[in-house]
Amino acid sequence: MEEVKILNKHGKLRNEVFVKELDKLQVELVKLQEWVKAKGLKVVVLFEGRDTAGKSGVIKRMTATLNPRVVRVVALGVPTEKEKTQWYFQRYVPHLPAAGEVVLFDRSWYNRAGIERVMGFCTDDEYWDFLRSCPYFERMLIRSGIILLKYWFSVSEEEQEKRFQKRLNDPTKRWKFSLMDLKSRDKWVEYSKAKDEMFAYTDTKIAPWYVVEADDKKRAHLNTIHHFLSMIPYKELPAKSIELTPRKPEKGYVRPPMQEQTFVPDMFESNL
Image (cartoon, rainbow, N blue to C red):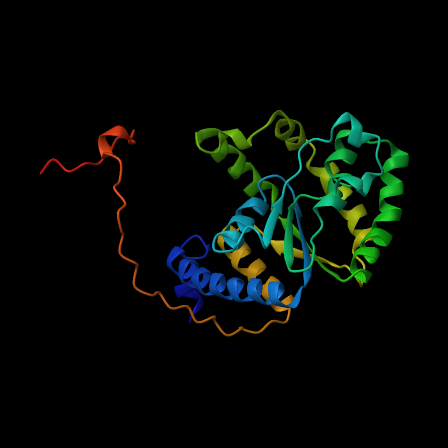
């Protein structure tokens, strides 16, 4: 397929191309899910990046057709006072997968190297201890049998500003814009420095960072899913044969009168 047919006049992926390719990938994700479940694999995927980079969006695309009992999303809030006194990684450990599970972290333990560092929510000692400890922690996870994948969604300053403005003007997205976003918006350089420092310590051979160019969200979503599928060798398992036998006839059961139930009003009832 020629590039002119793939991209629109703005250089972004055409929606019809995106939908067609996403349909194919979601079928493959289901195959992978069944393989993970059957083989007892343990998979952890981290999604990191600046605000508006599209992390949550790709997670929604990935999980849309999957079983939430097999593929779980973890998006932790602000740590409690008790959690602040714990070993830093402790609040994440309970969310790690058992055999046959995939866990997608919408932001992860790397909060310490990003927002906590830039906004001053941790001390210098806590920050440097994290950078030194993190590679060892991830090595422990991998040695325990966990497949660990780390994605960094990279968005330009201009594109981030467009997305911030769109959030403000869209009532369905305004809730995404927080006071923290206002503060972080003025710290572009500080976040860049924090990301570079984080990569210097944690972009290791055993657990590398995979950078996703995210100015075009649709391309970012497809590229991420393609890469994710390529990182875990899997095969399509034979589908279980299911036969729907004829329903057994009801004998002696009388349903209560319909008028005794309370129904949701039908707002689209035909006037014909």
